[in-house]
Length: 95
Image (cartoon, rainbow, N blue to C red; front, side, top):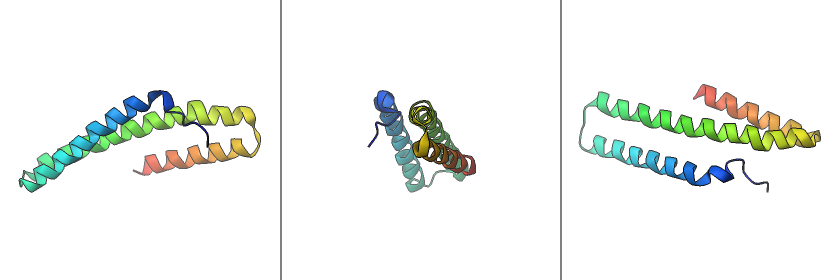
């Protein structure tokens, strides 16, 4: 298996995901404590934006590393990586 494009930023990505995990636990506590709906929704929105930011960073790394390397190599790998990137972008746009 190829090395992921984010390998050099893995620690930073994991820290960001850890913070998001904490946000989600906080949202659960808010619901358990019967907090005001709008406050819960605001925190869900913040967690969603944080996840989207991580997704965009991973996509950027994928394009800069995996796709660029595949394009250099050409052939089926190039087509596959471009297709994967296109599908990932489409999923992000729909979310």
